[in-house]
View 1 (cartoon, rainbow, N blue to C red):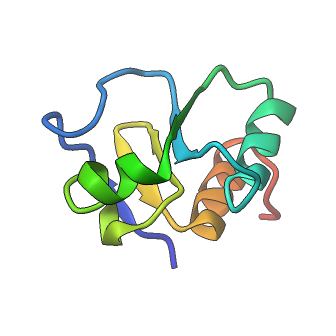
View 2 (cartoon, helix red, strand yellow):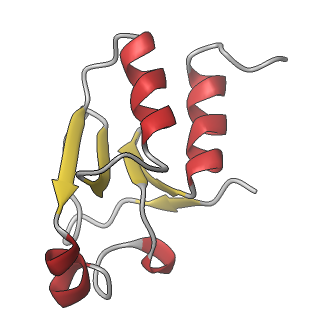
View 3 (tube, rainbow, N blue to C red):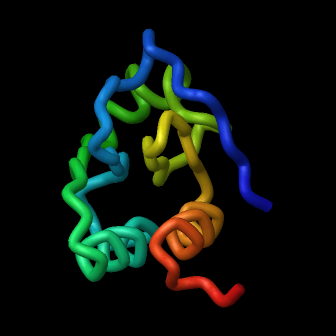
Length: 96
């Protein structure tokens, strides 16, 4: 299902521009990036290293200790398929 959390101002950036968090590799975030580019959404593609992830980021910031996550509309979304579902509804790409 779609897990939605309100943005924590202490932990996440505060901007109206969507921010996608993932590693600088091909993987689960590729479909999200493709959808955002297809809809010409101006978004921040925030990447971190595996070392940063293990050392400091994973235990403190990310829901369920997982990526990708997307900050959008004041929400923190995780799970790639849930993110795609949300974006599909937001950008009229999902069936009604």
